[in-house]
Length: 553
Image 1 (cartoon, rainbow, N blue to C red):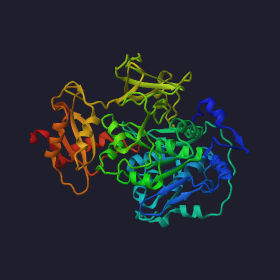
Image 2 (image 1 turned 30 degrees about the vertical axis):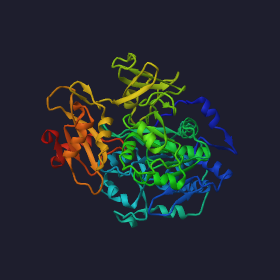
Image 3 (image 1 turned 90 degrees about the vertical axis):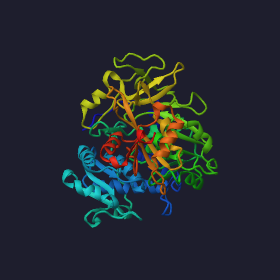
Image 4 (image 1 turned 90 degrees about the horizontal axis):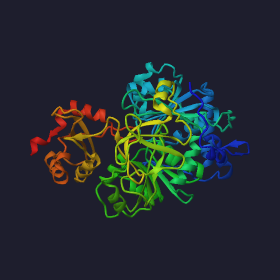
């Protein structure tokens, strides 16, 4: 149910697709065998989980365990082109599952472990997954939808320390038995570099999530090309707490680690409170983060040793302009900003020390990116429009699984339609403004949401803030009233008067939120972007948690 992609990245392919002892490192499983042959005992991946001892995987471990899981896939009846779902946090088994399919030509479907209900059922059934791998604490998400995923023939479960099982694990196959099985080398199935290695689902902010087929050649591109732009070298130690079910953790941390033999540390989940202690413990020199994560880190209480850490630079996608410079100074790091999309919507970067604060950079030489209006006419400098992208000289290609119409619409006119509204200054630097349909305008002014979030987030009680819009009470078309969704640190009581006071003192009158919405957590996508539709739903249904500015003037 997929189409072979046209070969791209020709120069990279010629370098990456070299054959060594009849092994081709474009395929992840074969790459791990190459590394196991040359550096078997290199401790490439470390998994830390705070409460538990570290779990270290050498190249030999990764190679052998990926073949154990490949054999399990074969035993479950999977063959080339078949799909299987991996639903878990950042555990070693996720690494093995990413590589196992590449050995036999099967396709992994990594799914955000927070996904539930109809959305989870859609991803499993839409991808035609025949096998599901998950952990015992997530069975409460699987069992209610079993009648909706009837094509699944096998469910494998792993029990984790300190994680309570939410179902009867005796009813399922055991992942531990796979890991304890004797090692057997599985023959590699012949595939083209364009053969898919995985299906990654979009967030589904405007409808059902769409599955994006990622070809096998993307992993070495991530591993070699991105690590070059991130200025990684073998002396580095990388870190991420972002989910391996998302392209950022795979592309910015996992792929560079295994393709460049660079040590990397993974947390089971992202932790903003322990982040800097983790960097000190493991000597982390670089980590990757997203804009929503940056604000959460910045809102943590200031400490005297904030700047005392080994991190050289932070690879950031969406650093809020309002906190950028202070973030660098406070934590003694440099920000390396970049931009891309899951569907391959171009690639731009802002090298350290170059370009203006707030810009995500300029396109790298391989890509064409331009900003256009609703008629596809180029926008002049500093005028907002949609950014569209493609590899130079090659029509854009996106392959949504079993959805040719969506694929065609996404690449109309030979360009990838990103849905991101940006502008370019007179010197060619790109700036992100908002997603299509996500702009905030109030009384004719466009509101800089990250600045509102920064001001409110500086109050000592505030852990996280997400600003969103609701239809303006005035009824003016295209206008919004502002709502600040707020999560408090443990031990603090709600004090809307204090937060409104901070906002009124630190913001222009037009930027002060009309409402505060107190939440236990900010609903987010797997890429740590706040989910506006759920924020709006909470605003409508949890009136006891909503406070109006007019009542505190």
